[in-house]
Image 1: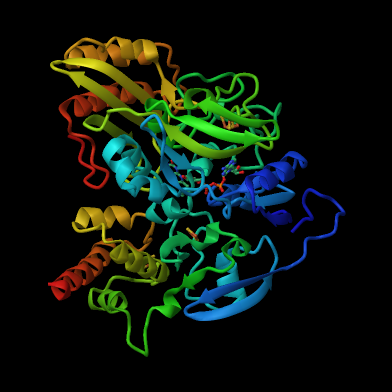
Image 2: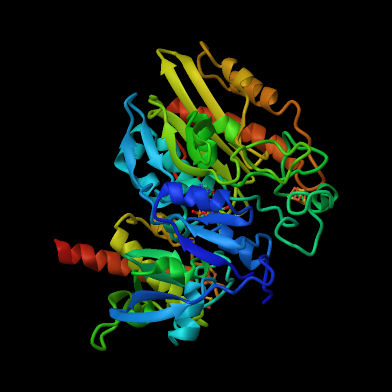
Length: 171
Length: 338
Ligand SMILES: Cc1cc2nc3c(=O)[nH]c(=O)nc-3n(C[C@H](O)[C@H](O)[C@H](O)COP(=O)(O)OP(=O)(O)OC[C@H]3O[C@@H](n4cnc5c(N)ncnc54)[C@H](O)[C@@H]3O)c2cc1C
Ligand code: SF4
Ligand code: FES
Ligand code: FES
């Protein structure tokens, strides 16, 4: 990494931030240019979140921040000070998989698995948003998650199943 | 990525003061465009001013019956706001035609307007590019230019502005509110983005140190006869090759008012008021729509890979006008084009 513009000027100091990650408050000192994805993977050893493109183009790095799914490769950690972050590691509760994790297994919704943590975090948020009912809508609102293996049909099946059983339970 | 210092601004005044005093400082909001460009070393700000804690995240009614969308309102929040959906469904539709659910959650109203071109050469510091490094040349003009402009180009740059939201805002005649070291200004959306001319490195008429505070939508009744039709290489999560925003006011059998803006074809959302007047007072008809399309594209110039856009744009205009006139806007989830 070059010193960039600013030449010999003193390098910026680390900045203290607090993040709640999967329910646990974590305090740390970060450099301003540390990206949230790299913080999760390299500093907190939460390697479930994947780096596909590093440019907002694939969705492998999707995490849920304050209830909203975002691409963690397109966010500086310092800007998320105080936020609540959920990663794939935080979805299972007391050893029981999240219903969408189970549905991915039931429907064989992955092959290599690289896109899967991002798909599942995105799908969990999609279900919470409550805007997708039809398969067309699920596909459209999941379009930010690319699957190189082409498991799309089964991914839609898995999400549809969870939406369906939630609706059943609400009746 | 270059190293930079970081400031979390706590007021608009502080943000403006800090930015104005440092030519290498930049604001950062959602970060979905700026961080991307920083990772490619296309942008190398020495100082980032984080504006996400400023109180610019509300959508408010204006005294004149319009809406004022704060610069930090996310694309997702704007698209799903019930007032926007009811009164400006064209804007909601255009936003939802762009990017992905994840990106729309981060992307902001101000940042969306200021996103930079997706020209491949602009993104690659290993190549010349007049927009990135003035005076080095425009390899796109004689190279790969499938996604490039056909209207309003210059010999120095043929890039497009990639925003969908801005195309709808152009049709809705939105106004951009900014605050700078010299106070506040209101810039009509159509004067906000500029054509490349001799200075393709300058995308907009915003001055250094000025911050967008809000985008204002004037009172309007285009909630029935509208559409946002976006054509691209992939049905979702792809930038427009051509897009058309149409808003019509229909009185009896005749079109009383017509607004039409094109995306994906120029360095700014493209409007042609003269073509719009061809519709005034006339009933909807495919012949008249075709005349409008011909008028808008009459000075279009295609390059090696993108000449197809001229014909595509004409057909898209006709189709979009038909959709709007019939009151059957393009769905952004069922991608079949009716
Ligand atoms: C893979 C991908 C696909 C995409 N597809 C589409 C698409 O189909 N259609 C579409 O329209 N967009 C698309 N986008 C672009 C996306 O909409 C923009 O990146 C986003 O809107 C930028 O907003 P932001 O808040 O993240 O901006 P930032 O990245 O934070 O900022 C962008 C620029 O705006 C400046 N800025 C931000 N806010 C202000 C303010 N209030 N005042 C002054 N300056 C400000 C910053 O200094 C910076 O120069 C896509 C992006 C990606 C990565
Ligand atoms: S079209 Fe514009 S942005 Fe692209 S290479 Fe030419 S000058 Fe650069
Ligand atoms: S790694 Fe973030 S979108 Fe691909
Ligand atoms: S399962 Fe391999 S990329 Fe999706």
